Length: 463
Image (cartoon, rainbow, N blue to C red):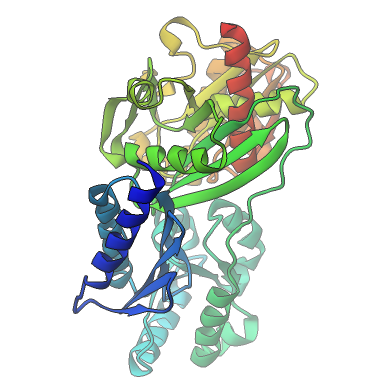
């Protein structure tokens, strides 16, 4: 599409949005660039930056961004579908506007009475809070559906461990004087202050590794959580980051990746190399992400048709992270286990002498194929710390017995301590068989940088 026609489409799109009246929100034209939709539980915003359009939804209950993307105008049909997704995200925020607060103590008895008192006070004060009490040993299984976790003083020493499990949910220990007196006003203030103080974790700084490669590379990392899909991206030149950002949606579709590549081509018209690192099942360029209703979609064929001049790679997230770990460590071999929060299916990246071990039909590391006999259904097992520990240990056992790398690394938020993994492995093998084990708490940087490294390695291999 030429710029003249695109500008006309943007003007038509802007006028169309202003005409979308609804009882669910008030629509207001703030200025020439900004349109705001004020809903019951969320604020929607449309910002026009020339031919680039930014859509976002901010949840009123906690000021979190629940939906965010920016795209270059291509067709009015596609642009209108993205606006409808914004409206859906606003509706979702409105339907979940109640702040879910989880109180936990050793048995749940003392916090149970406190939760009743707090719910009565919240109702009286017309506050959108709902309190529920659970014993500490059930916290891992139910905590993911809450907005904030309050720990009784007697288990306050567990706060670092609980926060490690629930990265983006505030975990706060109730002060002894508030808990002992069942100080309802103090507890409500604690919840409000904690939600306001919560900050989104910043993307870590770029790794300071020297990369001898002159062409620009777009590195895309897909992250799945129980609440959303995040698409992080960076444009690399050598090891420098030229541009970075993220898209936040409820579900992933192929058009999201098209929009992102099109947008990057505006600033980097000579971009010819794109790497996409994702969880899920990858089979010869086909991707399956069940929660996004993507089943065996031929991603590579799709991109070859749309961008025939580009080299686009689709890779397992575990392998991309393993590539970065290999560059950082002075070891010849390593295995990295990736067990996302939203899935009981793990993936493993194996590297030996700098090369990813893909194996026949690229199935190496696709652990969903393994006929492991778990202690219980893995969909239930993933909810508890002990269950996750069993999954991690058994996958590591497989790596030790078949590959025997110098280093084992993993990402699994439910498993906090490396020593727990070692002890679990000792149930199966002697301790001197167990290599060094490393736990990663933040994998964004490893994923994006590693996917850039994988693109370079694949290009050199095919040259």
